[in-house]
Image 1 (tube, rainbow over the protein chains, first blue to last red):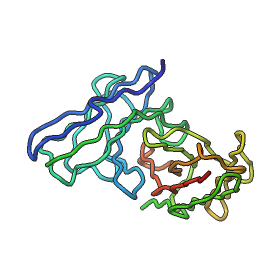
Image 2 (image 1 turned 180 degrees about the horizontal axis):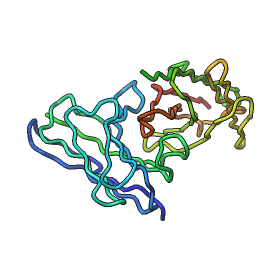
Image 3 (image 1 turned 60 degrees about the vertical axis):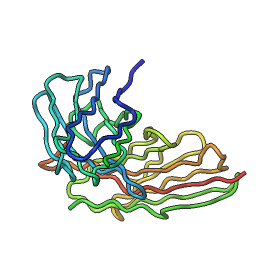
Length: 115
Length: 113
């Protein structure tokens, strides 16, 4: 089944403890991206990748890191999480390298709580 | 800075009503506008619009883009409780950051039986 898989689905952690949220897609998509969603707000883009070894900042990159060593994987790393990073996170991928030529396929989300 | 504004922010209707959701945008080098439906989990794709005046239709849902006035509408006729969701609008622009995508804050639609 074609899908974007995120893990874990739920995560509770403490301030400063490094964590990684994994994202994997099996559709051979070129483009991958991370978003966060907070109550009453839409999706805000954190980082995106248009190709292997190519990543770039979205609108809210502070406090996050990503890497794209393989086409299928795009992990999100929080080196020192803080409470303001408590949010619902979505990973997404699309066939085309740009953000505008093909629709996004989303993972099921990771709900992160930082205390 | 690219901007996408959706209205209304929330809407409550009864089954059988027709609703119109709005999405206006200010972006440089616009390329496409996409609508997604989010039901308590991952957003799912509805429509992608690139040309003005061409209506996209899927069952009771339809959408159209006006590139002159910089907006799109999403219509849902004969609403059902299963249409209750957050509807998100996103805009893609061809600029130096071709990978950036900008979403609106969404419209929360509640359909009552």
